[in-house]
Length: 160
Image (tube, one colour):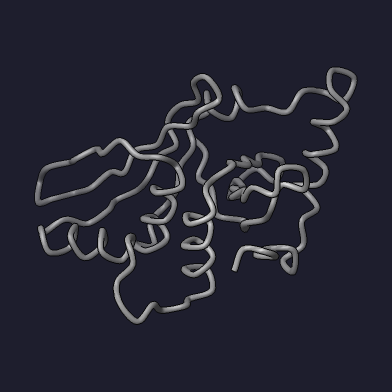
């Protein structure tokens, strides 16, 4: 498994859909872009920028429920990629019990950020999502270069 950090959120230049970009903490060349919804992207950006909502929004509510039930999030894992769909798990400790909750990656990432816990990606997910070599697909190589060269000032443009 790779431990990842949220490198940022940006827009796909073609579809204008948000992409959360995860980057490995250990291996510089391991990057995982995941296309997500606008509302989930906005929530990730608000948390990264430490913007406190006046009332609990969805992910703050989820955090409050988990805490009120005596739980704490241990980690999140992006566990699979099937039919172009990513799958994730939220690992919650409640006393001596481990509860693993199926999740969309964007929701799991939002929860991980609010609990300040690690985000892991299974090696098989990285392998399934690898960008082909340039001779196989030049457009995907351009996308990989673009993702690797995103600057901090590029994050969040057009999402607020």
